[in-house]
Amino acid sequence: MIGSALYLHDGGWDSTQRYFLVAANKSNKIVVVDAKDEKLIAMVDTPDVPHPGRGANWIDPVFGPVWSTSHLSADSLIAIGTDPEGNPDSAWKVVRDIKLPGAGSLFIKTHPNSKWIWVDFVLNSDEKLQRTICVIAKEDPTKTYKCWEAADYGRAVHFEYNKDGTQVWVSIWGAADQPGKTGEIVVYDDATLEEVTRIKDLITPTGKFNVYNTVHDIY
Image 1 (cartoon, one colour):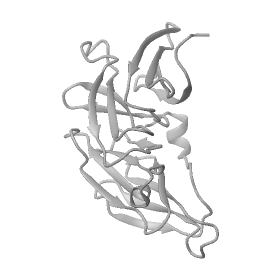
Image 2 (cartoon, rainbow, N blue to C red; image 1 turned 90 degrees about the vertical axis):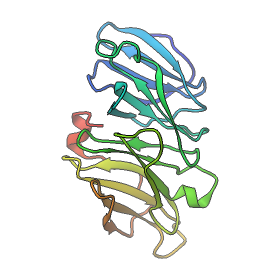
Image 3 (tube, rainbow, N blue to C red; image 1 turned 180 degrees about the horizontal axis):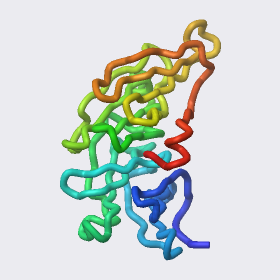
Image 4 (tube, one colour; image 1 turned 90 degrees about the horizontal axis):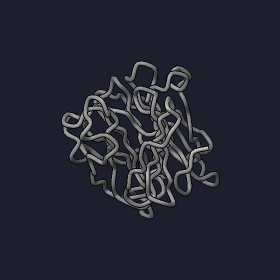
């Protein structure tokens, strides 16, 4: 038992799989635990209500290896340094606070072979933002690179890559009482951000997971 902060919900490993980072979303903190030494390392202050899903590991061009989360109640995506040996000045600190079009994000996602970080806004109060997705370029993580509506109805939520990181699958929540708009999955080419196909007539698809990526913590 390791005491931290209220209330722990959603988290994942850093890229080395030594450190576990989990949101204490009532306390607006990310809790960092060293799984090797079995001790609390840090509690990092964040904007309001972090909600990382499993978070996103990537290499920042200035600060090296980082882990990111978006937020339910802040228009912000942050990056926390996760390399205490190679980049000690950045370790367990918020090194990026990237402004987003709005709050209400449930999930972010990336892949080691991708140049993007994907983010949704599914719980935003604005209907247009609910179905909007954005990408942030890892080579210039100071702003969003591009945002667009993934559908003309419903809410866009949750991203998953295929094994080699060339495609991203995005769920669209629909309405069961609207024929033809119950839900679908949109598949994008990760390199070009162009739509590949749509898997239609699904009832409110949400989490979907590539088995290899899940087993090996590729995120």
